[in-house]
Amino acid sequence: MAAGLSAEVQAIPASIPVVDIGGLYSSDPAARKEAAARLGAACDDIGFFYAVGHNVSVETIDRAVAMADRFFALPEAERLKIKANSNNRGYRDVWDSVHRNGKTNAKDSFDLGFPVTADDPEVKAGTPFYAPNLWPEMPDFREAIEPYYMETYRLGMKILEGFAIYLGQPDDFFTRHFTKPVADMVINHYLGSAGLHVSDQASGPHTDHGIVTILWQDSLGGLEVMGKDGQWIQATPLRGSFVINIGELMKRWTNGRFKATVHRVVHLRDTPRYSMPLFCNPNFRTRVDPRDLGISDAQAQYEPVTSGEFLMSRFKATRKLWGAEKKAAVSSDPNLVEAAAE
Figure 1 (cartoon, rainbow, N blue to C red):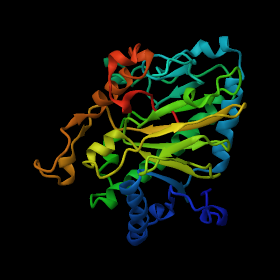
Figure 2: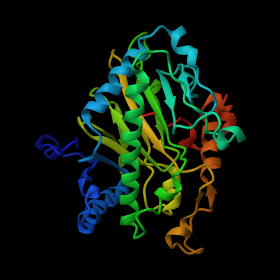
Figure 3: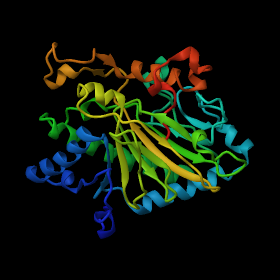
């Protein structure tokens, strides 16, 4: 069931554009090109947009959220039975992320990734980011979360097709690098009690690490995007929509054309908040080079990087599981001071 563009959504005078991407599912090249033009323009301008008209059903979303709520209601001892490893699989407690202000993190999380088995060649070789998912011993949890992951992942691939069309490339210019992607999803549970809901303890200003983020957020809100004037814009929750934003790797790939915009999470209500971002990143060894898009050596602002190595460098600056202990000793880059965690 597609999530349609309601009259209420159309009437919202948001600085973050609302883009109906339904045309990307069409067999009509003109409809696909028109939808691609709208989402591409948003990425050129602010690097954020609401996606509506997609094919992720509201029922799939609601089932996943209900199971997430049940999981985080479990005793901590039960959640810690699947404590996360350095490949971003399992439960992360409130102590994992490193913050500049030194305060306790205001969320815990559940991480999963593109499904692979223990005998997968990348797993056996010890390639970072490749590991089987860890699941709690909780009825119906996996059965709800896996379909949500796959539907959202397919949405990400459709958006990447739109990017390719907009940039004058074959439809599969980006998606052909996603045969075994580093596409990790996080279920974030922002705490609403014990004084841990102060804004600068939720998720501080940051840019995302990778290619494109597909974010579902609940009705409480809290996501804010920095506008061109340096003022914060509220990303007001729109039921049935996803918030899409560009990461640092895609900024590099497009030679700075697509914007990787600073954003944060402000959680001021004394009630839990949920969000579920899927970070769509390509195969570990994907070479990201703006020259692939026709940029000359003289015009290129970025040197080629390997996707997986670049992501590792960012995690090492923000996650204790990846070795980050002291911010000051890691980097002075303000965009590296927080982990992506909408």
